[in-house]
Every structure is written in structure tokens, then in C-alpha cells.
Image (cartoon, rainbow, N blue to C red; front, side, top):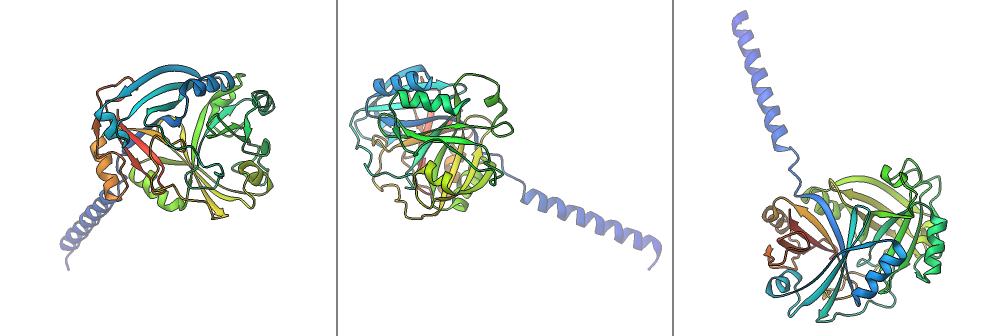
Length: 343
């Protein structure tokens, strides 16, 4: 074979290989995330005035909106017929909670024996600058303990070492966490102030299978994994008030807003599932708002996963005082409700 023909064959082989690599790279390119940021975390309350007063007086939140709504679009969005509701939006730092009272129809109370490893469990984690001061303030407010007391996670657990945390309940027995990060852990802004109650780091949900939840939140919706750990021992048991607790913990985040923390109980695995008939007016109901630039595309992606929808699809809302005009409610693999809203 002469040199000219050999050089030509080498050039052709290189071109083909380059094209093949380009095709492979394109085929495996990460899709644009459907979810860009995490918004307010919502919870259903029995008396919005009582709850708003508790969050403001005890935890330092500020009420920034108070909205009463009714009508057909809201019924379709929430999956509750004849709905009239009132929402108080409570802000702490950059994050917010939506406290919603269903004036009609009233929902069911939470189970008296709810446990932290039940798969309908969800909480909001409020960052504090000083655990001793925060615990004293919570004791003075006579909150109900969900942990036996504040816990410091041990030094052998590198990803969680030095974090101090405590679970307690609000007036409707929703579980809340106060959490103090040592230097070098958590967002740097949590170290930049002497205020006691600072903001919301994450909302935590119990899941049955972390990998299935990652396919939903990371691979389909586009949240990124921001941290992982595996926690066990007496401190974790007393924090969650679950004997023998061993958890796989995965934190996901958008570009802004609180994280979504997945709590998989590797032990014990006897947590109860989300009730099949759970509705938005029941007092165990939480919903986390996720903002997307393509609501139709996000809905189609969830349908591809055979996700359960609360809403029939994207609903156009006539009342935009809470910051969005189109939204839908859907459930994750364990039944936790997400509100996808158009930016």
C-alpha cells in the first residue's frame, strides 16, 4: 500500500472515530434540569392564625402574605372539591413556609402514633446559631418534644460530625427540626450572623428506596446531589426517637431555596406508607414547591415515570398573589406531594 493511500485511510479512520465519539457524547449529554429552584414548603394547619403566631413568636418568622382563595381552578389544582382556603406565607431569611388552613372542607387530624420512620413523614429544618439558646426558647414556649433532647452527631461520622439537632412539634404536631452547623458544614451564610433563627436549610422526607427517589428527583427533575451520609448510633436514635435507627441520607438542591433531604431507614423498616386516600386538606399534608421553566415538559417527564398526579395537569390560576399563575400537584414514589409551578 503506498504512503498516500495509507495516510488517507488513517485520516478517514480518525474522522470516523471522532464522529462516533461526538455521537456518543451527544447521546449521553445531561438534559437541562426541569426544576431550577425550590420555593416555599407548604403544610396544612387547622388554625392559620394560631400557627402564624407560633411561627412568628417562637421561631422568628415574618408573615409576608395572607391570601384567601376559592374557585374551580383551585379545586382542580388541589384535588379537593368545594375548597376554600387561607394561606399565610411566613418568611425566615431567604426561605418561606406556606401555612394553609382549609376553611372548607376540613380534613382529618394526624395519627396520634405517627413516627419519624413512617413514609408520610416530612419536616422542615430551621437553622439556628446557638442550640443552647434555641432549646431554652423552645422549652419556654412549652413545645412538644419529638426528640428526647438536642443531639450532637459524633465525630466518627465525617459528613455529619459536630452538627447539633433537635426535633419538636408545632401546634398541629407537624415535626420541625432546629439544626446548628459547625464551621465548615452547611451554607457559609449560616455562620455570618448572631441572630438565633436564621432560615430553612432543607425539608426532609422519608423514602423507601433512595435509588428510586434519585431517579425521580435527580434524573428526571434535575435536582443535584449536594451531600450524603449514613447515620446510626445512640445520637441518631434519640434525635429521631426511633430505636435502632440507621439512615441513608441524601440531600438534593436546586439553584436556590431549601434542599430536599431523602431519609431512607435502613433499619427499622417498619415505617407505615402514605395513606392511599391522603388529601391536601388533611393535617399530615405537606407540599414542596419546585419552579420550572417548562411546566409541560416537566409534567410529561413525570408521566413517563408513571408518577401519580393530584391535579389533572397544569392548571391556570386566576389568583397569582402567591407568585405563580400555572401549577400542578404530583406525587413522588412514596406519595409525598410536589407542587410544580411555572416561573
